[in-house]
Image (cartoon, rainbow, N blue to C red; front, side, top):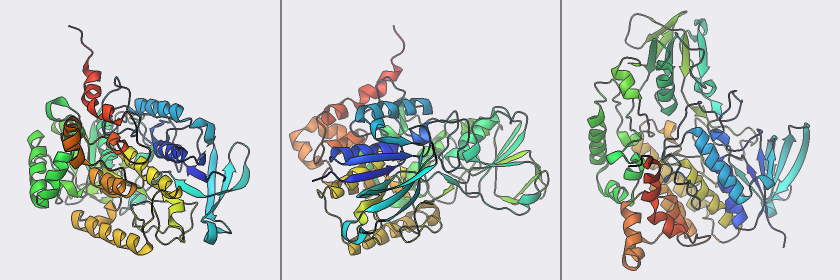
Length: 506
């Protein structure tokens, strides 16, 4: 019997995890990548590419190397705990070499259309229309399954403010922002206080006399350096704290976390305190913004009421604030131009996907997967990898797909949860909690570690799994495609965390 053919769209970290998951099941995989390089978001480019994710030259990952990696491939121990984008790209390149990724890769191949094949009702197959950018040849291929790994940071979302059209200065989206060159001596307004907005404001403050960070809601800010200098997420993303989070009233756990964040700096004093609670927003990581605010290199402002020819007027202010440029760090729209609305309908970032992966409206939902369509309080990469492993097991008939009724019920329950926890819920339709989501998927796949069993049979491993960081290797201990080195890798997490600090010989 011929191996099933799977198309992976995108050669970033999600595409790599998807490829490996399918190869583990013996599938024939083809990876289509529109650009001329792998690593997706983490491959820095000086130029802006329309329809492709983008980062700044100085971007460093917000999740540490032990929370972030593939479940069977820890980052080299000498790598920094928080990797610069060049190190992240290096890690992904090492992984690509390990799994034989490039032999199945088609660079400069753009997916034009993805539609159900003529025999879809019986087979679930998909017909892809692909353009070879190298020679403009357009061709068709049929696959048993398709994995969409293009991310959701490709199509900038730009708001429209009153009189915006009369502004004489520069208007740009954060997608196009690479570094502070060309902004020397300029007055700049940055709109939006997410991770991009904070990073851009800090970057600009090094060369600009006036940087204004405009926020409609405010935000809680966390940092990379945690207790005793350890990576913050490796301290907080543990099964112990996850248990405490689940058994403690939501209001109380928020109050405790907010109190902890205010020890570093008073969010109200700094003009940042939002009305929403800390666990009702996407995690915002920035180590430098507080000191920039304290030094008045960055000034916090409210929403923009309207533009003038030479600046803006902020809400609640009578006078205009002069500026030379406005950078919109206002997020992205979810867009899949190669899919019709009959396949997936997205309205204001709202969609109906089981586990944010499969559409229950399709006759064969398991044959089309959206990988990485999540915004976790945690790391995207290992979660996307687990999604891919789930897809591959379903395609291999080693796992059972829920019924349409069960999927719809799960989607409704998830939307209810989002609305309960996030006031501006349409802004947070992709939001998931790291351990909660990973355990849900792992349970469906038969790879969730049995902590009760390990408590009796392997107390040392249990202790590290419960009180140590919830690392992706935990999901390779048992079940399909387990990894013989998973236990050892879990037990040596702290060694790899400490390794980059061992630079001084005494």
